[in-house]
Image 1 (cartoon, one colour):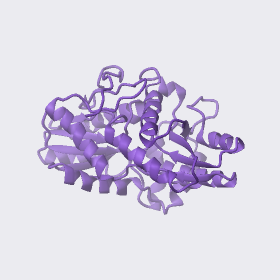
Image 2 (cartoon, one colour):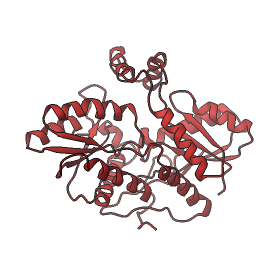
Image 3 (cartoon, one colour):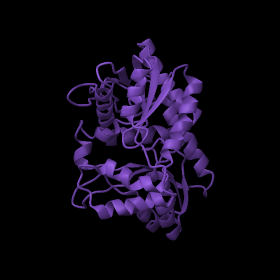
Image 4 (cartoon, helix red, strand yellow):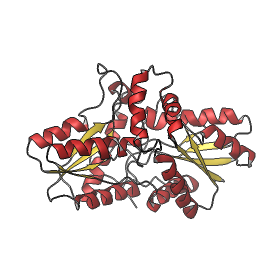
Length: 340
């Protein structure tokens, strides 16, 4: 399978104070989120001048992709400019016939995978009958370069705090019902598996997984424990230092730079915990190499490159033109194989 372009598909974020509230309304449209909740979240963005880091990081990643791939790179978002619909229309007008779609999410699950296939289908409808074929690359939570980047980041963070720091992984919490929507705990099992791979690569035999950034009514069960509750329990048990690795995020979203770097760090320091946050991949050249390798899997037809660990969790196949990889659900189809 050959490609004549790449589409980097992401979540989007505001790039000025006047954009914050419209962006949040886009994100929460149809979810009956109270206005006061949007006001609260808006303050997180306004703390940073109303600018989310994500668009700037993605533009830097595009520069790295251009250096790795001899292909045009397009950029589209779900929730803010540049919108994916505009990107696909531009691709059509430029004569692109088939493009690989690399998303800034490593996971299966509804919001982390299926919703991106919906974005692709919507953008193709906007482009009309001459829309290019769009092939969404597979989830990459167990790719060797994903593991390598996070393991290196854990090691670098650990060197900034006292020896013996507890390693705590975090990922975005979702409602328990959503975690069951596309298969038996597919998202949370993938996250847990990736934590085992990264911890082993970083030399840890003991570590924890907690969840962050939940929202919604308190009566709805979400994945637990929350990272705030978990750090409080660690401090109460006598732990002196923590390394927090936001493995659920491939870039510094607001949920990283606010929820962790601001709020969680303040909580840790108030309870006497030395705190270090491991870096996300952001625009690391290896992240661009990871995307190039996923494309090469499809171009050559070779077996996906994965890191094997105990109790492996499968990933999904690529999807085409916004169709699920295995209708009607995103079903695991690949068995983990040793890398190389």
